[in-house]
Length: 281
Image (cartoon, rainbow, N blue to C red; front, side, top):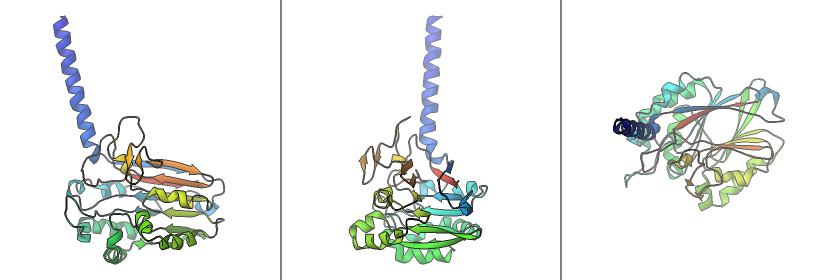
C-alpha cells in the first residue's frame, strides 16, 4: 500500500507541475482586465466617475501576440476615455527593422476605438524615432497624438486637462525637450491626466500639483516570481523604484501598467498581460 501511495503522490505532483508550467507559459495569452478606483481629495466634481481605459506596450509587430485579441475584451467594457501609453510597435526583433506597417492588423480596431471615445497616444521608446511616420497614421485613424502637448477635453460641462509627454529616453538624448515638458505644468492648481511611457518621468513632475500619471514600459518585469515585486525593469535595473501598480507622492498618483506584449523574448512568467480601467473618484 505504501508503494502505491507513493506512486500516486508522485503522479499527482507530476500533474501539478505540468499544470503549473502550463499556467506560466500560457500567462502571456491570459489577459487580465484590471479595474481600480483612484481617489483624489480635491477632484473637480465633473470628473467624478470618469473611467479611463489604458492600453500599453502592445508591441504589435510581434506575431506571437497578434492572436491575443485584446479588442474583443475592450468591446464589452464601459469607459469614457482611452489612452495608449506607448510602444504600440517594436523597434526591431532579432535584427529585423521596425516597420510602422506592422500595425496594420490592429488599425481597424484602433479606428473603432477612436470613433467610440476620445483616444490618446503618447510615444514609447520603441517608436520615438518613427513618429514622423506613425503620427499621421494614428491621426488618420482618429487618435489624438500628444508629444509634450496639452489637450483640453470637454467632459460634461467642463474640461479635463490631458498632458502627453515625449518618451523619457528621447528627452534624455535631447535635454532641451525637458523644458518643453516642464512648461506644461505651470499651473499646479489644475487637475491633470498625464500620459507618459517611462515611469521614471514621475520623479521630475510629481511635485507639480494634483495629477494621475499613467505609464507602462516595464512590462512588470515580464518574468516574475510568485508574490514578488517586479524584479527588473529597463533603465532602472534590479528591483526598480517603479515596477508596476500604484505609487503616490503628495497629490500625484502614478499607475504603471504591466502592458500587453513582450519585447525580444515572447514569454511572460507569472505575469499576465493587462489592460486597465481606472475610475476617478
